[in-house]
Length: 610
Ligand code: F6R
Image 1 (cartoon, rainbow, N blue to C red):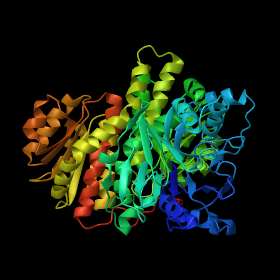
Image 2: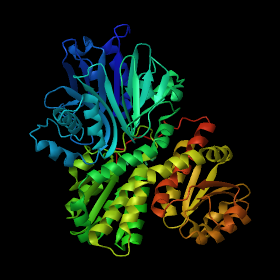
Image 3: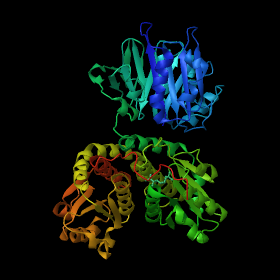
Image 4: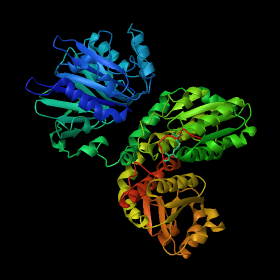
């Protein structure tokens, strides 16, 4: 995930170029912070490009930044996806003639294919990024006779994947061309100045008049004009102008009251990003070692362990493989069983959790192959593993993991689907599985739209309670565990998850009038929950059901005090999205109790002690 900003102002606008850029880049730093760069159209008609690794504060200290002068500029905060953080890989990227400068947020899935096309024509690349190809494509179409904006549109038409693009072409230096697909992009309409950015916060200091662009829209802004088109036809966006009201504190969080809400609500985007990222990575070596594996271990801590559990069930259930999830810190206890020929997948958002790192080191020492599934591809775990799969879900700032759980589950299911394809497993419809995973972001969006209000209402009930159970079956168990962990972490309510069938072997002793029990009706072996819900209800439990809206099971309607109605979706999508209402319930419970969900007591985002 990266942040982009661009502005075009007239001579009448009293704003200083460097001030506008610094303000925008600082506000976008939450989207990426490994490198920063800007391109400004200078008075002599060329570009001044300043870029480097490091934070915004570090990069803007360069003496030449302070004296930047120009009316059209673009800027970028980077969170590396293709190519390590380095000056060369920092945006903006230019074409060979240095007349086109590009900043990009997203992932261009077919960049290698496109790069080969322009390499064949003698273009020279300066970076390892997927982005640079856009500048060369524009140059390519201009050489064929296209005008700058036409060349930009032709280049965009060739891209697959996710992108928010801002491009300046010195042959039309008053305009910033833009395009959006999946990655967010907004236009800000000011007085004698117009903006494009990933986020309103980057320019809200100067204007609160905003147009949110939609997928597939392309266009340009100048100091006096905003032009948008879709499928080649002009779009009148005047009716889409909104006035936004953001206070200083909410600006930091992209308009959300907490980083946690921001991260919960950006899950559709994170899922789309991760799916794109997975598709662009060549994982055939990973598939080969998994195919040959004697046994597959999946290790992780906390939320990452819950994703590992779900992944292990998927390896067993879909592919019949011997897979086991283990808590990282317990791994050393059983590591004598780990042998040459085994594969150990380490799941970690940060890639720095010491327990997971040590488990993977131990696994390598014992001759197993290690695969890192991480959100930070430059982390220690990634560096030390034999193979790396990078989720690229964007930085997660709230202590409680949310979007990284859904993207970890997506990634593990993607590996399962690709392994089914690789091994020719005849009983798995891998194409349907991949198709399901591809649409998971749309379902996540529908869940957020449909379920937030009922989750708030449930939170009002839970906020008064001391304890809660979360029950599910098979795949539903790790989801229940994740829901219970969230409630404990940020709402300080004791919560435990069990396989529902276990509840009668002890846990039910605690249940009395009003005791909350959350049932995860995944639409997979739901009938096995029937007797458990009856048993709970008979003891006075307050039953909360998370279930597909059209589910016919009588027990849901008969015994539930509250139902979170989930959209209908294939199983693989439900495995990813069922946790979302549980995150919302925990979040709103925390807020209702007057707690700060972003800073739960006694916890740290990354645990680097044993
Ligand atoms: C829970 C949470 C932690 C982490 C755990 C592992 O909300 O955030 O339980 O999941 O510390 O962290 P990573 O995934 O960075 O290894």
